[in-house]
Length: 218
Ligand code: ADP
Ligand code: MG
Image 1 (tube, rainbow, N blue to C red):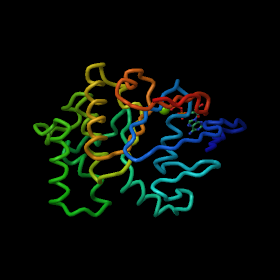
Image 2: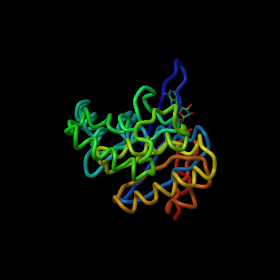
Image 3: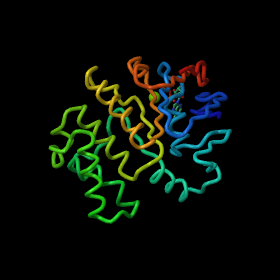
């Protein structure tokens, strides 16, 4: 994959020939300093942005062959995103935030509610269903965001610096939770981070620098 961003006269090579294969059920940590291209790569895999050149296959589907409507469908059904800043809707409760992606997916209301409650219980927030984000700690908000990312039962979870905003014990709990979800659901996780702690949990570490992969180790 190659990705060139043009800013005025300047061309930024965010990805310069990245080649990566990830198997179903793998938990991959994408490590590298700021500016290495981690977020750019996650955005390509999740269909949020398109590469300048190169091809992405997810479950045999070539993303560049999809039109905008099909790409939206792909993002909704196959991919769960979790971000550093949680991106929860402030006026909605934890339960409503988790249910939100089921609306465009067309899931019946009662099924959506059942699933959301089950997921919030799974991430340890069964007693926080009706709290708003401002009434939750950073770690709790991140767990709501993880539940929301899983509500449409995606095959891939893309996590971008999700432990960047919480203390170390909370980061450990979040990473352990993700490790468990990989096992339980056969989820494929790609987690971008510059937090070395993730190497204790993720079985595979891919290292990036300057838009290239410079290491790939178990
Ligand atoms: P990381 O997530 O590893 O910190 P990014 O993927 O965000 O790295 O960025 C890789 C490079 O691409 C950086 O040099 C960054 O400045 C540049 N970049 C990222 N997004 C854009 C954009 N939308 N426009 C221009 N340059 C960008
Ligand atoms: Mg980034």
